[in-house]
Length: 92
Image 1 (tube, helix red, strand yellow):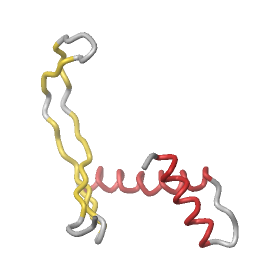
Image 2: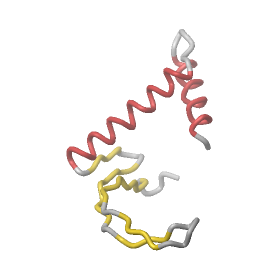
Image 3: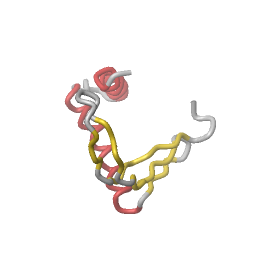
């Protein structure tokens, strides 16, 4: 599923639950709000759990060497913090 398809799905679901039609822009804003709140919670506490869905955690990635696929040149990749997701057992 692409982001556009996901936005369409959310738009249809929100429109069917309200007495007015939800626009694609409103559906996208809703998704961005949810994801932004998850990012903020992970940044603040280091994790976010959603019972029945899964958990998000921050993880530090060490600096490493990589290769530029276009040129084959060795490059240094800086250390960074990323968000990981683990689905609840039996979710899928």
